[in-house]
Length: 213
Length: 184
Length: 210
Image (cartoon, rainbow over all chains, first blue to last red; front, top):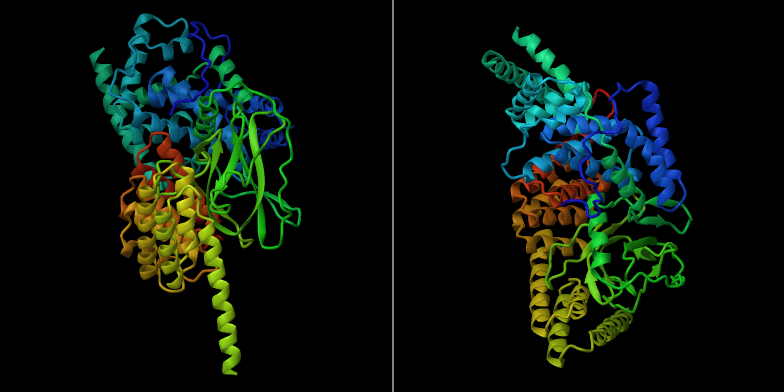
């Protein structure tokens, strides 16, 4: 079910805000819990809660968006999934257990949103030909490298979603297997096997693409 | 290029950050600011100790969406009624006071009905919250399983933030709540 | 001695009769007399069998609130009475009223009696086990959401075996409900959430335990 309140403006061609994904330092892990507490202890009424939650959004939205984009293939789907994730996290913040890293908890919501989106979507061309989800990452890309990036997208798409999910968490988000297990609900051995299989298939896929060029 | 090197280079490309669009971020923060509080059911024991009830809404977003739809679908302009306190019997030993809440800003009248009041729409009228967005009622209940629903301007609606009872004999399923008995 | 017992029995019977009469009057006024009599008769027979007669009055009141016809109300009440008797047959004489009601919901959802029995047995004797009513409510709810019976029952059994408590079972239930509402497959959601909770239960165990 899509969010009821969607006040999404027309797509901007040029992003004015860029987020970068940072490795989570110990300090950030501690600060996440502090931020969560700040949200929960904020005064009644939407304003104070929302303001305190903004910092969590800014810290984690880039990573969520990256994972969702690679997982789902289009910016639109990724933004939908990320928005749903952050809204759900906001709503359910009082259920967050501080003994779990916030990122783990948030990503478990995100992974489920992505799985739901994949189940729900009809078969359509997901990997758009102009590759705009790569465009902003490299504004000076030549048409040839843009094409390569689209092919990279196709290589990911060729993976079954469970392998893609494990691969992205391990190699793109660079999580440890224990955290991945907590996020996905799968065992560590199963995840390791999925990552191995994903890598093997990607090597084959990429090698074919490379030979064709 | 060797296959491993190709994969490594590809991973680097996939690790490239995906920029967060200004418009998307703004819309998200607007939605968060506009979001009503999560419908939560708080246990207030007669000892005065508060804790959050363990039965939590299934999915926050779905709950919010359904509550908003329930509120908006009932038409009527928002009016700010006085927030009269509803007289609730004092908690007695063996009972646990549960707070029921539903977001229905456009409603004129909301009641709580259930197996604890023989589905009597007049038994437990709810009061409007201070911000006018929600309707509230604290009710002492015996430990155990209870089925309930809200009557919003004459329409029986289930609590979108709670699981439904399976037996749906009359078209509108009821919601279910398990009240702790103090063991948990 | 025997006269005292007779006296007490009379007092008790009077109390029961008074209660039933009071309940008869609690039926919604809009019901036709024939409906009220039929509902009361059903309630009386359930009460005599030690089953929760009140549930029948509640069902009738619920139907009246929801503008159901007398025929619909009677049908619902008869169905409930039948399922309560079946639930007693499955769960035994010791089952609480709310367990019986939860079992009757599970029967309504299509859970076979044998599976209800299995779920009840899976709770074991642990003091921390979820209540029978909660266990059966979750089972019935999952099946009503198109989770295959064996998957639903097997998942719940696995959680119970691993020491799940009330909170865990409720979290399991509400999470799956949310996944399904979000468009997820009932089976996949059940499998995934079962694993989630099992992982969480495992992590609660002190190191060294299996």
